[in-house]
Each structure stands twice: as C-alpha cells, then as structure tokens.
Picture 1 (tube, rainbow, N blue to C red):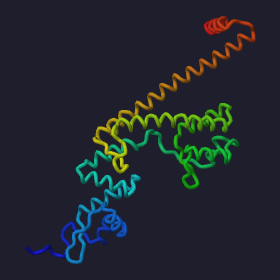
Picture 2 (picture 1 turned 90 degrees about the vertical axis):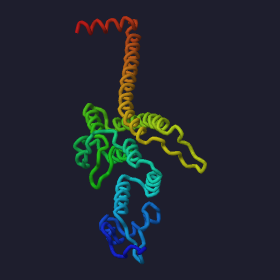
Picture 3 (picture 1 turned 120 degrees about the horizontal axis):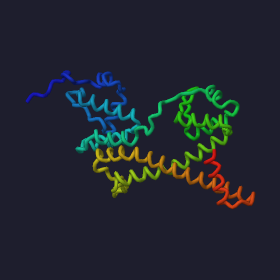
Length: 274
C-alpha cells in the first residue's frame, strides 16, 4: 500500500501554519506536546502534519488557561476526558464552584472619588487597610471596588457620624467572621460532593464520581448559604439589641430606684400614648 503523500491535505497544517491559525506561538505548541496535552503530529517524511483535532485541542487549552488553569490541571482534565469522562461535566462543576457569588456590577473609582466620599478622614493608612482586606483592588491609578454595596454602607455610616477608622474596623472584623462561615459552607460542599475525597496510595485525591450532579448540588446550595446567613444575622442582631436594651433599662431603673418591671411598663405606656 502506498504511503500518504507528503503534501498538505485539506484541514492539515505545518506547525507554523497551526501557530498562525490558533494564535499560539510555535514554542508553546512544542511545550504542550512535551507536557503531553497536545498529541504529536502525524509524520510523513520529514514533515509533521497537524489536523483540525490539534487546532481544536489548542483552542481548548487556550480557553482553560484563560480561566486560570495551570498546564498540570489541564493535563489532568484532558486525561480524564480521554478516559471517557465528559469534559463538559467537569467544566460545569468548575463553573459552579468558581462563578461569582454576587451580581453586583464592577465599579472602578479613583483616589479623588474616595476623597470626595470620605473627606479628610480618607488617609493613606485607611486606603492600605482597604486594599489589604480586599475591599479595594488596585487597577493602575484607580481601584476596583469588591462590593459597591459595602462601599455605600461605609459612606452612610461616616455621614451618620462614625469615624472612618471605626467603620474600617467594623468591616474588617465582620469580614473575618463571615470568612469563618464561608469556610464551614465550603467544607460542607466538599464533604458532600466528594465523600471519598481522601489521599490515595500515592497521596493523590480521588475523582468526583458524578461532576454533573455535583455541579447541580453546588448551584442549589448557593442561595441556601446566603439565605441562612441573612436569617442568622437577623436573629443575632435582634438578640444583641435586646441584650443592650435590657442592660440599659436595668441601669436606668437602678439609678432612679424604679423596678425594672416598672420601667418597662412605663416605657410601654409612654409608647402607646405617643
């Protein structure tokens, strides 16, 4: 049987043509082959010929790199795909886990904007704290706001008379507390979608059996996590306010020699008359 011709066939590329078509440099194509995430070309004579399948694989690699995957992770994904795993399911789980948890629009502000919002209270030390906490992200000479809602709340608290330093401390402490809550929910998700996620014989983690079902579960848990935090915060705020109110009434009653029950009754009566 005669061998295939050494000339270019339809849908075939030399490496330079493949690089031009895919927009990926030749050196990167060779690197992907060394990492075994891109199959070698078909050799015909002294020329290596790449197919449309190679081009599709390069475009997939480029998309995964854009999504933040390392070459090692891409290799694992492609290996799972080649073993029969549905890559769409694997990527669907990744999207469910990493897609934004907020629908707030991206906002970019300048140092001048901050000065106008907070006046003389806006100082370099406060700005550094906002950056280190992740509330502001430097973007050239400007800043991306992690949460426009939180920024608006800070402005309103300062306008209500609270010093910016106090507002920053409140934000930092609250973020620390919420991070602990987030860690608990992430642990719950991890334990649920990967019940057998434990080191294997060589220390590697076991695979998720059903990525599509795991992605669906994560999507269901997303609103539940937010609603539960809102509900618990409402309960905690009510308890805390009642405690402060009770302490204040108790102190007032003791200072004026009025029984606590009488003070509460008088307060209720005054409220009804008002």
